[in-house]
Image 1 (tube, rainbow, N blue to C red):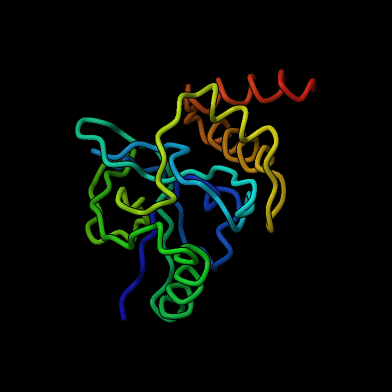
Image 2 (cartoon, rainbow, N blue to C red):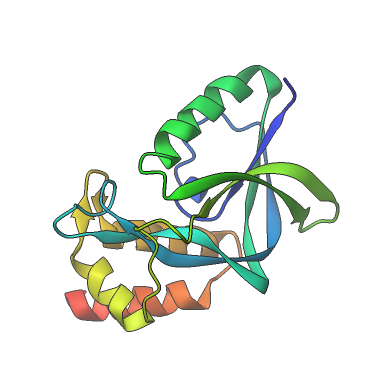
Length: 178
């Protein structure tokens, strides 16, 4: 097995959970980062779903994130870990995409989890509706707003701010009075 490349755009940015040999800022074209997945496991419950980020197909869109390289001898274990973590409800599809590295060059065959738009957890909500849900939801991995704050903070640390996430951070803080 060869080295495994993985594209991170959400919680993988701050909690990959696997051994990383190298990271590179990368761009994925024709996909956008969006709170378009209802979360009934990690950041919400069946009774009170939260929202988590997913890659939603959008021709012409650009998503900035991190490409993680995992050495070949750890690829199988990493793939098993990611499948257990990301495919818990089958709302994500496991795909292979091409990414562009910020410093130049392309990487083919990058493991990338994207939303299945036909899955019942797929949703399209206005930012205000997203903020209301994120401010209140909590699940097995903690409060939904913690997920938002960690992701937005790490994107800023990488020099990759996301205007929608920044708006959501400000609005969720306002709703929660923090």
